[in-house]
Length: 547
Image 1 (cartoon, one colour):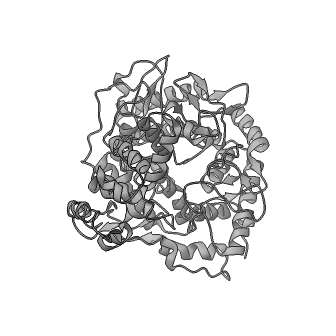
Image 2 (cartoon, rainbow, N blue to C red):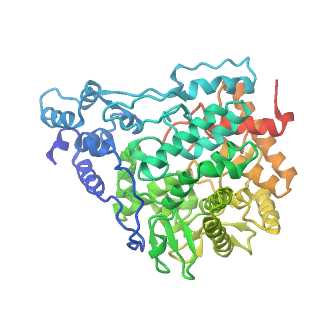
Image 3 (tube, rainbow, N blue to C red):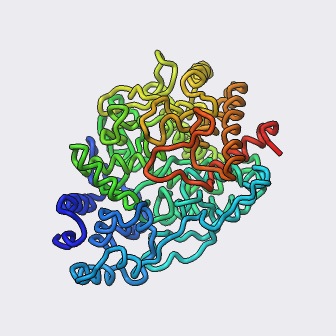
């Protein structure tokens, strides 16, 4: 490993050795994981950049050649990776060698999606969003040899900024806006793209990048299919039934061979035999897009590096990357324990997926399937009520299955059982009261009441969580609070747009004029899910529109 000596100090050499060793730990068990004997059959995954040119990749990321680690992960090699890696090994010790020059010689670097866009602040917010869709829409094209981009057959909408690819759970909220802007063909194209990923890989990855393939994101695919329904959800589910069932198989892989108290991949068997799900990642290595940050975190944590890497990656699968809800001590990223947690949001969505499959099976008259998934949904509902409902506190909260106790770290995820219909009316009323007391701020709801410095905590609010709240509360007849949340949120979105001409990824909902912070990267504008939720809320509450 002497190749590092020319580009970084000895301490980083040791960190690189740890990271490279961990990159071999694909699908290694963790936290009482037990072999389950059933695996989803998938197309072989293309190798991510960290495996195509591992020594060069580690040197660039640990050497901080770029301020954002995602830049090099998205870079396009100008030649064959093996040849570039060999040339790096030959050239690195030559006089005058610089790593930055070598990278620019051998790679085409990406540009942020927003680079070429200028807002016209004389436009209304609705006009601005309508004008953004073409800019955020990518056309299908070959990804190029050794590109980390996974090609898709149809056009797709990206979030914006550094997010140059389609993202799984973002896309549902983006599609809400496409629906309001009358773009059914683009909506169907996006669903068909996700269907193609399921057909190829057995699941929908975090995004269409090779380095995202080892994990997914919150399973909103069935909700996207539902948006295509034109009032006939069962018919839509029937058309996409093979993909819905295959995605469900991904989340439930290993369910049949688990003993109580054991876990495999994303399934956990509890002491009474109930099955609930967790977020996970099939790799235990630094993330390509945040390689240096992950290596540093593992070193500082005092824990086994592979365990930290997997918990961090599982946090990324959750979409809440990162939040105090995943931290054992409620405040420190190094204490992340995502794989030990059974999340409210994930299990609520899987309940929704089970019911969607049931409806699709009923439409095609597959009685055995419809009966199976009716029972599955009922068993999950019972398990959610038993393990994720806190009767004394009056909210839903995640469950730490290793310690066999609730996490006592509630947040906006408590609204998901309302969004998918698991909650009893009395429970929904108590969740609403807690939300109004603990989460509601001047400009919407915060992700959690905790100010940890992480982006999925206070003071930040996020568009998807506002919609989950509004839709869930309306489902249970709590219309006043739903409209109040919508009005506060749209006040902030309109305020920022009036001042900057932008819609951004997240907002500080606690104070006027304050910008959101936290996270591993700068505040991004664009922004797909903010655009979509804003359009949906203005359609639901026309009085919130401004000229």
